[in-house]
Length: 392
View 1 (cartoon, rainbow, N blue to C red):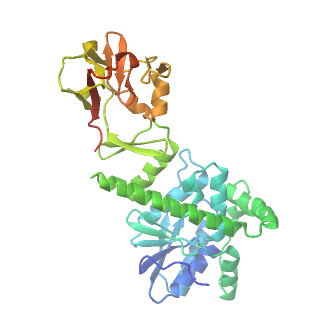
View 2 (view 1 turned 30 degrees about the vertical axis):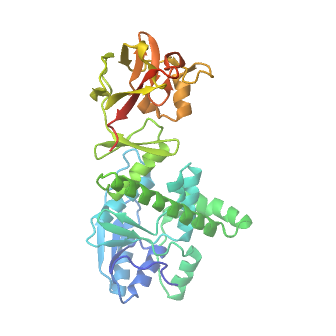
View 3 (view 1 turned 90 degrees about the horizontal axis):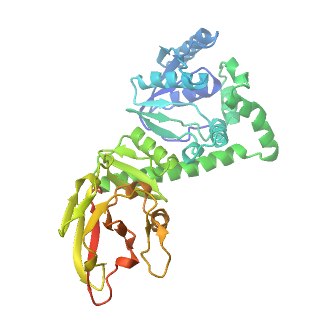
């Protein structure tokens, strides 16, 4: 059996629990002459056998002539499940290790179980991606070289090489979701779908590739707009929020807000809630409206626009219930319906300057001029235009 991935670094620390997976991984990597291999063991103090496991790891590393660092951690649940709290403490210990790469012994069975658990919990594409073969972790890389290797193959390797290992008694606790899937659900699936683990792992790779493409696209998009590159963690969080939030949720980055609406990405300056009062238009060709983040422009045209006799005009914000008839052949409709039809995002609707003549709505950006106020053919008209300064 060989590790399935090229090492991301010549210096690697194996996360050694003493179980068969991490014991095999240490033995396997230690046999690679091009690698400088050490081990890190995290003592959680959760099991009465924790000291014995640490002792086993010390003896194993001594026999294999591998240096070992033991980290004692305190597991604080703080509203989390015990597994999640222990994992957080463990990864904190990994982050403090003085090596560029941490090798984790997750295998094919672990990957399939993880994907199944995530799907049952209603996870999206990222959850269906399972665990990556390698991932950035602060200034380190987390590397999972056994992710394509089955537990059966790992056990066979251990026995073939005369390796000893320890068994964590918590692996028999079916109250833990992973153990329930491993001990109850997995065997049932295998009766009907012998390759279920390979199938889920293959699906995870496809979803992972899709996630990588999404990350690259977002990173390139932000760069094209002249914005600073987010950290890996920030980028993942941005994608998570954009994928799971409603259209009014804004993801802040570098002074701008990203939103997703109808599978289209919008990037605009972060603006405070508009404190706008009704304003009269006094014939200017340009009227700055900083409270709304833009500028109104006006130009004359023959047979188009607002008929000139319909001045004076005033500018107001939408208050609700307004109706407009941009097409004289169709009935008057609510702005809400017209905005939805035009694909104008909800958050932009609140900042659009509406033109009125008295109490009659004349024009709405992105929708057009009400039929009652449109300039007849052959007469001079006024064409308004809204220029938003919110875009980079």
